[in-house]
Amino acid sequence: MKKLNLFIIAMVVSATSVFAGGLVTNTNGSAAWARTLTREASLGVDAVYFNPAGLAQLKNGLHLSISNQSIFQTRTITSDYQFLDGSPKTYQADLTAPIFPSIYAAFKADKWTFSAGFNVIGGGGSANFEEGLPSFEIPVSGLVPSLRQSLTPIDDAVEGLTTVNPGFANITGYNMNASFSGSSAYYGVQVGATYAITDMISVAIGGRYVMANNAYEGSLTGVTIDAPAAYGGTQTPGNYLRLVSSQISPFDPGTGAVLDATATGLDAQTADKQLEATQSGSGFTPFISVNLHVTDMINIAAKYEHHTKIEMTNDMTVDDVGMFPDKAKTRADLPGMFTLGARIQPINKLTASVGFNYFLDKPAYYGKPELDANGEKVMDEDGISFVQINNETTIDKNAYTISASLEYKLLGILGLSAGFSTGNLGVNDGYQSDLSYAQKSSTIAGGVFVEVGEMVTINAGYVYVMYDDYSKGSDGPPAWTDTYGKNTSIIAIGADISLGR
Image 1: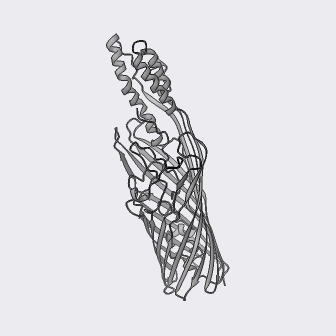
Image 2: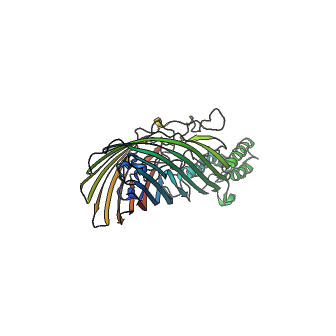
Image 3: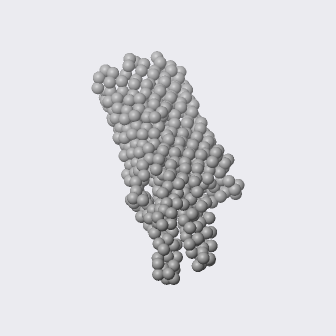
């Protein structure tokens, strides 16, 4: 009988970019981004994150930026596994992040500019799977055909002896209660220094300290089967096999003993399971940046962020499924990233921008475990942690995004903007699961900016991310396909304050 892996949580929401950017990196760093999608060559205060070298173009003095985004995502997973109740069955999960802040500050004194910032560089939301997922339910649903197959020969044997088929195999369904919730947040605190080599060329160097925290809570309870009413109806699989054993042991003690042993195994596999655990870790991201301010009309920028090694340590309260051994360590890196952007202002009222982000995913470790021939995770030498694989086996190509935007100042204080972005995350089937999957996407955005005097600019934007469905098949038997879908909406508002002179 197929082993019941009731929780398959190899990579839950750890370091997952559920909003914008690469596989695990959020690039939605400000409200100005939410109305344009293109800030790689920013000359505003949010350049603290997007283009640190561009801060040389600010006026002397103090500059601040405060933004918040409210993010809403819906995930759907449709499985056509034939034994699911209602197959093909669709599972839906909602992920929310009502508070997603970014705060930046820069102080310019002639050729030098010093900056600091805070944002959510990875994760940032909580997901709630109220009805479980295919990876929870498929093993349970498989009990029905497995028990039917095992009990049919017994029915046939009894019928051969008595001419009456007892109908032990007439199991009609299964029942279960499953839920899972997870949250993830990777907070980044950074500092940097910018130096204007000339009026045209400026450079920046800095670092970001990343603090990662994940929390998981789940349960799988009430696993029963719908046995024939004559034998007690709905009950646990173990109890049902013991009942069948009691019926046939007087005639066939050997088969009865096998059924009793199988029942004991099923008791353990279908017992109520609980999970409550957290993970925490930290890492450091160095970055460099260069800005080329060709003229007041043309600005070009580039930035490189180094690979961030993050080792998460488990803090387990209860783990009936053995997925989060206490004090075990798991890698959950942020990849290196290269960005390139250009900002063109052909007339005073119109600004056009383009951007390119390239994520160095393949050398990183994202917490994917190595599996043996039976699909079980391989234990490390310490006897606690699991052996992990790098992304060479789960990612075919590094992720990238490209974007373009337009901003137009309608009136003296009011402007409109719109942007478009697309990209590909380059993963293969080995990366995808119903708890963590990535798809090619296209993003549209629009918004307004309002200049309140010379000191304050209000930014407001709306973003909608559309994802291509991704289908992953399983050889079985029986063979089936899971299809992953997703959509994301972001509402953002923020203020940039300039106290420069």
